[in-house]
Amino acid sequence: MTFRNTAGPIKHQAVAVRNGADLSTFYSCSFEGYQDTLYTHSMRQFYRECDIYGTVDFIFGNAAVVFQNCNLYPRLPSTGQFNAITAQGRTDPNQNTGTSIHNTTIKAADDLAPMIGTVKTYLGRPWKEYSRTVYLQCFMDSLINPSGWHDWSGDFALSTLYYAEYNNTGPGSNTSSRVNWIGYHVINATDAANFTVSNFLDGDSWLPQTGVPYSSGLI
Image 1: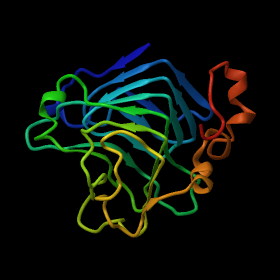
Image 2: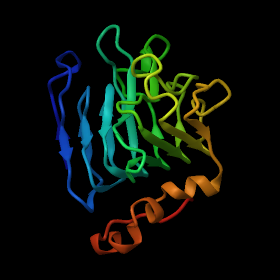
Image 3: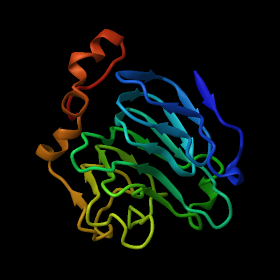
Image 4: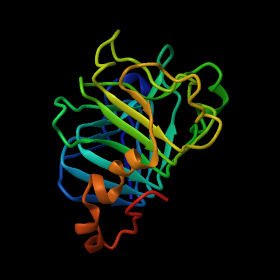
């Protein structure tokens, strides 16, 4: 199933799907848009083997969400824009929310591929003060800017956010030139396990009933 917003890159926010349903699961779906494609608004969500296309903040919201075995395809944005894959919106450090991207492939969409050298693409930026996003065991192609992450506005949230990477591969996964923010971390397997389907979503208690395949832990 495909969810598509055809507004294009110059129409600013143009959501294809807004999801606020608890225990919601999308399997083998495609989400196509430009800015703000997929609004993972709230509650527990799981996406497996989905394709997601967009430009600015194209996965955003404040759900507790895991994307597993998915494909993320940054597209060509409007002139002067950069791509940010995520804009997570956690507003309180006590919220058990965040975006976990696991065993997922990040490659340029066809329209962006010839422009990788001039259009910058980042893993995310902090929409809210306690923004939390992790990339675990993903393949990152060369489109990812060496700094990895981008600020929202000056030093907003840079000391309160939690951004982390664990055991990613590919030419865009090198962390040696990443941002040096207080809130950015290269984590170990113990910390990464906090963001797996089993621990982050309590997925073993409800995903088997959906019939959707999943990996409960790290691979």
